[in-house]
Amino acid sequence: MKNNDRPRLVDPFGRVIDYVRVSLTDKCNFRCFYCLPKGAKEFEPPENYLGPDELVRVIKAFSELGVRRIRLTGGEPLVRKDLTNIAHQIGHMDGIEDLSLSTNASLLAPHAKSLKQAGISRVNVSLDTLDPDRFREITNADLQPVLDGLMATRKAGLEPVKINMVVIKGVNDDEVVDMADFCIEHGFTLRYIETMPIGDTGRDASDQYLSLDIVKQRLEQKFRLIPSVMKGGGPARYFKIDNTDLNIGFITPISQHFCETCNRIRLAVDGTLYLCLGQENSYALKPLLRAGVDDHELKQAIVEALALKPEKHEFKDKPGTVVRFMSSTGG
Ligand SMILES: C[S@@+](CC[C@H](N)C(=O)[O-])C[C@H]1O[C@@H](n2cnc3c(N)ncnc32)[C@H](O)[C@@H]1O
Ligand code: SF4
Image 1 (cartoon, protein in one colour):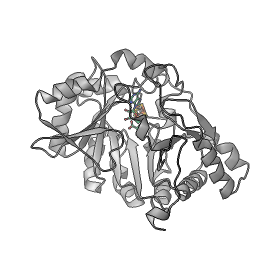
Image 2 (image 1 turned 60 degrees about the vertical axis):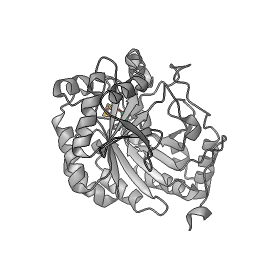
Image 3 (image 1 turned 180 degrees about the horizontal axis):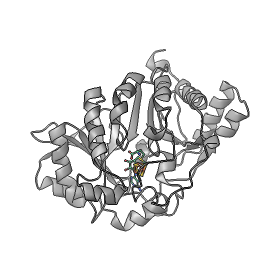
């Protein structure tokens, strides 16, 4: 089918939804303080997870409705043993043009090549600091396996690699230039992200929120930033650092929201569709799947769910809205 003839999922505000972020697990081997509480033990029981067949069925329904891009995320998707198998099935699915992965990269090195072969084209890696002690303070984990994972992406041909740095006042904001230098050296794309009040952990970190306008000013003291565009760059506003190959993106959900161009929804590990990262509007697909609905009914349910997509998040005016943790929705 030619692209123009494909069906499209359109929300009540006229936005075309062609991108789904799929959380493969709510578990993680890290405990980033703004995401998952240190003592977190309450995770979805395995029987509540969508199994590989259920997942693949839902994603096939999405693709038949016009979704073209899938990002596998979590929690940490690499803690799920069947990741490569799931990736293979989605990566070879008709209609899916782009399959990517968000990861903390700590478990990536041994799997980078097989994930690439399975059909994952590129990865986003969370990395907030280059200092091992600080890294442990933020994540409760070691930095070196992450650096090993990052270097393995290159060998496996998983490109471009985007580094996501959550900028936290008084924690890592003094490293924004160092991180740019690191990405220039290794040829990674860099995106700075504002802390969001998602779950108690995200809200607790709100006093350390820093507007990325300030980060941009700091970068401009050292670099000349030229506005640029990155294909598939999502909500980030991009700049190229003059005389380098580095593209940097600013993801500013708080200081400058980008809801009017939102093109995505999220599927949580238990099969709940979340229509907005910053709202609780949701639709449970698992009961339908387990009640034996046919493919037509499943697609109808997805279209119904889309009608619940809100116009925008309210992180600024109603920071208490989202009670779930980022790791359970799939960031
Ligand atoms: C939830 S993680 C899941 C994938 C993977 N474990 C990782 O860390 O990349 C996805 C992204 O959400 C970001 N994130 C988590 N909590 C956040 C918060 N409160 N505010 C802003 N970004 C957050 C992380 O930094 C990461 O880039
Ligand atoms: S941000 Fe990613 S790596 Fe950090 S705790 Fe959340 S899910 Fe884990």
